[in-house]
Image (tube, rainbow, N blue to C red; front, side, top):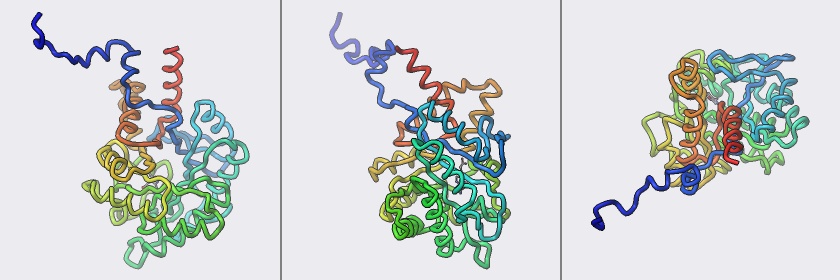
Length: 334
Ligand code: PBG
């Protein structure tokens, strides 16, 4: 046998058995990595499936306790709340109403499930009659600085209800600093900010806008959300929010932007969240329903890839199923 004829290092050796593969596994997905988005609406006894998002429901407040029990049983310990208000108006007034749908949902969860960490989406688009993320100026564009007042009022109102963190998703300039100052002034220095810092103007939000009834009635969001062509600007947006006091930054959507996620994480070294959005979820569900892909395998591969790219936490509609599958895999190895 001639020395050097064959490779000395054979990567296949470490792939031979599951135990060997585990020795060199770099990324381990866990239910603790997930944040589960929840749509809350007025009413009693409601749990309505969203047609474009099979397996995801709009629920009424009285159904939240059961929902929290299910999540806790699966090891998922945080939720991100979205509200479907009973009324919409020009100025999105239910967004900052202390008895709005999200505020009441936060109170209910904090009372019934004290171990759950509650994060609230802070934005105007679900609450305004025109569906834009803030106050309109005379030209039909969103007035940045006037919108900051609304967002800060909404954030403080969520904090008063008991939110652990607020998550501004509007993409107005300067909102993290403005909200931070408002929370501090209202004695909520301990309430954190998870900023939707690097959020693209994406076609992947379509099913969410059905779910939250938040599609803009005219135009689009390109004057405030980011151009999908930009990665450098994506890093800059997250850096700005860190400077303004964000506790976590975010890249959204996840899968088409893993390069941006990786750069945000490695260049800024800050807690980073990825939002695996509605359209990403619906694509997987549609292909799986047709028998074109193995859903379990694909979902776990996707979520592992998002974590490998740099996410500390993943907001995902797949959270419950993925947590169930991960628990099954863990019990099979024992
Ligand atoms: C609110 C908001 C949106 C999403 C989260 N917060 C929609 C949008 O910006 O149009 C999208 C989430 C998803 O698609 O799952 N601004």
